[in-house]
Image 1 (cartoon, rainbow, N blue to C red):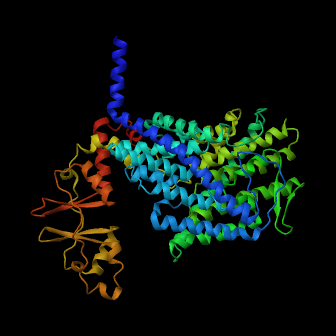
Image 2: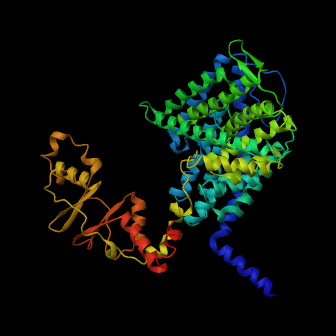
Image 3: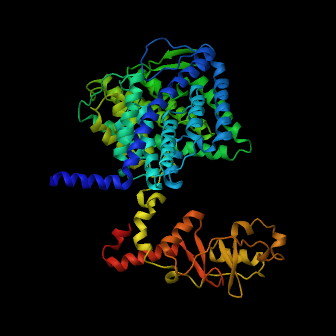
Length: 618
């Protein structure tokens, strides 16, 4: 009986923390992910048949089913038009109805967790699905996982609001949605669930969402598998790790995938910034990117769509290369030329993905990352097999294994989700024999790629996320009050000071915001960004009273630093004026984020002493 009571008490603790609602939401997310994946795939097949089988006359290879038939492209000149049409429809849907649905989806879901308290607008899942279908089916270089991550996150957010759970559990519902969406569409339920909790951070996990993610991912996978079968997504031969000598090559492969991964990240965000700077309506930017992708597709059709449909060919030693001059697919017998062409294809796939999604197209970056890694793995293994023929015991198995490990290590490095990617690709290929060498290659790629990540919204770890600010700072910061740390010597201006002098003070002190005080009474603030836009000939004659911002948040002596930090986060400010009260508005000084940080660190020193302070504060 005592054992049963203990179990009951533990269940009360779990349910009392809001898990009852979260578990129900997980069930709904799983169902939505499974049904959503079926709809997504069917729409994708239907539109791809229209764009490519009918218009272009090209049957883009599928990863799910290897068909070794002769490839042909009847009307390659239609490819740029097809990609442009898909991009136009996608751009219209996104920028008209849900601008946050642009890009690769997973990043938007990560941002919803960290910065928007788990809130995703209701229309986003539908717009994301349809816009991504048009992008991918028309030949845009993008993946399925980004849309499914945002769809899952949107469903989770919606039902969390419906059940009126607190923001913490709404955030967890978003995490569960990310994992379930990706795990379902890739038929990788375990890896997908772990990906959802790992991709939020560069070096951490959102462990509380793991069990609900398991439930949602399994349900989604079961529903989708009932429609498409439960075989792994990649139809490839058996792989094997034959000899410890191969670890030398897999270490080198880790270095190469790290290099291509960094190129992937740099080019991706460079093109995104370039397209953001274009002074044309947003709806037309994906069209411009789509035309360029289409031109690349004429030269190298392998870069079109998700790209990983070619992997079953490569794992069987078949490397069809399109000859744009003859309009035929040819076989390259020269291994040096072939490996060089595969490296070029890896770069072109990076370029095509950067143009597609960086221009505002809708789709994921996971699938293209697998394709890039497969190109790098294939090229590297071909070189290694021919340079060291006695080093590899089974060349065919070694080639296949290198392609799989190349897929893993490249995306594990740039996604900063090594554990999830290791498990996901193992599930997607149905092979677990490569886990040991993959771990080595992934570790090298992860370490060498450094801080470069394809997910811009990732944060370092839980303490760096606004979602966990309360967990790590509240106890200390609620013990310290504004009156204890206010900077009464912070410079201020009077209303009659000229704009020129105010700018000079700001530049001299390295301050971007200055309070304006008259007769010891706080009036407002002036900012450097506003003052610098005033023409130089007016700066001396114009006073700050003409440009003062009077509607600014303030703080009071009795407020705690935790409350101040929340205000700064909410209003995106680095400093706040301190006044006696709202009636007298007597100015007492300023408090900055640096003041809050220093007070926090001093309190830790007081509590634990100087010994071990460096370890505690990092």
